[in-house]
Length: 384
Ligand code: SF4
Ligand code: SF4
Image 1 (cartoon, protein in one colour):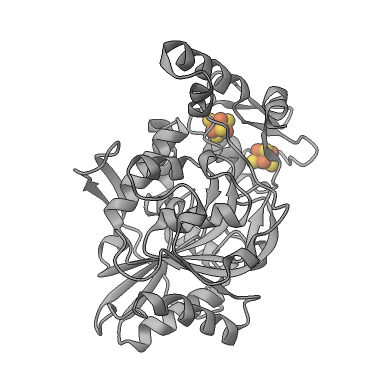
Image 2: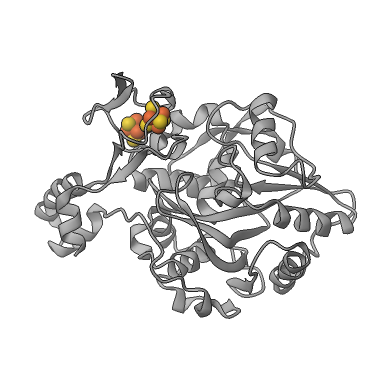
């Protein structure tokens, strides 16, 4: 997978001032040939993170200044650029136009995707996912650049390069995928199957202003101050984990990448160009997900270890919980829950714990940040 250049390039970028952004982007892509593969007449799809209709300063979406600079670089090579994504919810013009508007993409004059067709694909090489329904616009591109945002994430711990390609699944279909792959390890394998299918030519991560805490939509902006680039999403994500103090073994996509031999175990094993250590952000608020494998290894493996780890995993698994004071009773969580595990009582959501598959869609799409990732007392005790 590693073609040329280092594993990851880490370039300082203190803010979204256009001149600074352009210089940072040029420096980030230069070690990978400076987009020399982009030829006149090509159509290049830029898969941004447009998770919700949120303003750029909320740090939930890829910043429009960075997208503008990338579009300029592509157009200067005589190619056509198209920016798009499919967040959770409807996949149509009315819904996406609201997202484009709020995320500052219209104001930046960006060429935006307006093809909302969907198509079936086969993934014969997929480990878990052999077929999928995906957004048609990406299939029509001659090359894809994945432009993600660095954020904490309720279900996957980390939202960066590998997670971002879930946006190639139409928003209306996402609940079905959560239902098909309720286990985070399976969900991660599905994501890797998608990543391997799309194989973007380049991955970029906007870590200028990241999101910490109740991510990927209701956390707080946190400056990290850099832009990351690479040809392998998992190597970039490994560095992202290192930058925000997240233990790589708690990130399901990284564990899946280890199993497939796609990524080393620690940032120190990566070939990194740039002063990455100066961007390690102390006290970054993260959401860690403990997993059964760690406990199985403590018990020495075998049937006893497997049973114990299963019991312990269930006892300490994070789950969604409602902050009743912040909830406005809008029912969005109930509407989006793929397991139909939420009912409204007195205008507040009540979760059926047995039915809940812990996909954290309710947490991701609560517009008030009222749905939180809660960790049981035993989990907090073990964490200490
Ligand atoms: S989506 Fe959030 S605000 Fe709306 S009902 Fe659910 S918890 Fe409350
Ligand atoms: S309650 Fe939330 S976490 Fe549980 S299945 Fe529904 S959306 Fe997913």
